Amino acid sequence: MLMTALGLMSGTSLDGVDVALIETDGRRVTRLGPSDYRPYSDLERALLRQALADAAQLTNRQDRPGVLAEAERMVTMAHDEAVEGFLSRQRVARQAIDLVGFHGQTVLHRPAQQLTVQIGAAAELAKAIGIPVVHDLRAADVAAGGQGAPLVPVYHRALAGALKLPGPIVVLNIGGVSNITYIDGELLIACDTGPGNALLDDFVAKTTGEPFDRGGQLAAQGRPDQRWLDEALQQEFFAQAPPKSLDRNQFARLTLPELSPADGAATLTAFTAAAIAKIVPLLPRPPHSWIVAGGGARNPVMVQMLRDYLAPATVSCADAHGWSAEALEAQAFGFLAVRALRGLPLTYPATTGVKIPITGGLIARP
Ligand SMILES: Nc1ncnc2c1ncn2[C@@H]1O[C@H](COP(=O)(O)OP(=O)(O)OP(=O)(O)O)[C@@H](O)[C@H]1O
Ligand SMILES: CC(=O)N[C@H]1[C@@H]2OC[C@@H](O2)[C@@H](O)[C@@H]1O[C@H](C)C(=O)O
Image (cartoon, rainbow, N blue to C red; front, side):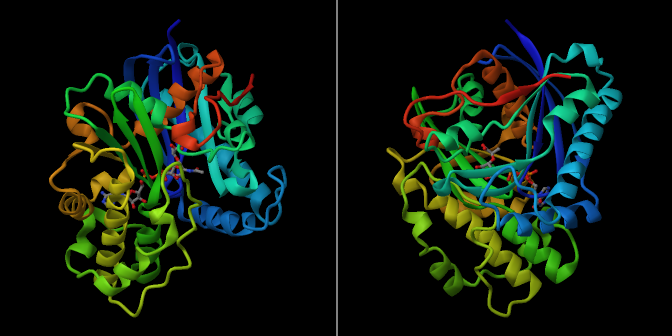
């Protein structure tokens, strides 16, 4: 049975809440609807950064020490506003939505300790918006020994099935952290590859006060520090075979030498691109076609560096295939919510390392 779902994603970039409408039976996607965005204010972003710092102490995923309780209330409210804003701006009737897929905000991700924590109160959200909410989509996978991420590969597979590109195809998401889905016929492999925009955003915010390097303008004026890059790329994570996943701040300890804002931005942009290319020798066959989504697809300097590192494979933007680079993850959480409701698998041994394909998620009804 077809359902109309709204997916809500608040990613590791801490930039805001993406909302997207999708019509699906959990296997096929029959319609991609409108999407919307509710940015975090500077104050809200600062609260989230503090929440990430306070979450580093967590040993129990239910605990909310420090500012975590306050941050959780803010996240719930921002998602409520995101849904209400979507419904009014996109002129969609509330009754037209069967289900909401709510990711929440990851504040800690340590699958080796069976710990993944997303904040946001689903029961309150369901009550506020009057629509059933599927949430906590990573926990079952982590509890069963999986990485709990990435979750979007099943959605990438559903979309890529309709493309006429030479395979293997890789769908690459460059959000706060970067992750890939490798699709070769029936074979699906996925993992996080390393940094996305988070390190670059943090550096740009610190050195210029801007939230990110818009259009790659800063990086375009700088030159990567090749020595630093060569060393940073030696980290063990890059040599590990998939599946593997990352916490947003896993690379935060890496410090750049004294560099100008432009050279620092160029270096971190190159780090993201080079780290993505490091996955190629760990895949069964070299990918033929790469499709880039996520905020990184909006950074032409990053995309050009990727083309250089990944040649002779082709690199195209999700938008060129009629997908939405920005709304893809939010759509994925709508799709995952429908799969969860149906009891269909969300994750597989080759996407998260979980022993058998498993479903996940909890449902909160209004
Ligand atoms: N016009 C642009 N130019 C350069 N960079 C951009 C642009 N637009 C977005 N970005 C980058 O993309 C980031 C947001 O990406 P995205 O929305 O995919 O993140 P996310 O949803 O938090 O991701 P994830 O959950 O996958 O980590 C911004 O923080 C910024 O670094
Ligand atoms: C733990 C967590 O929130 N991970 C995010 C993060 O952001 C990108 C990458 O790291 C990916 O693994 C994941 O998000 C996407 C939506 C996923 O699960 O597929």
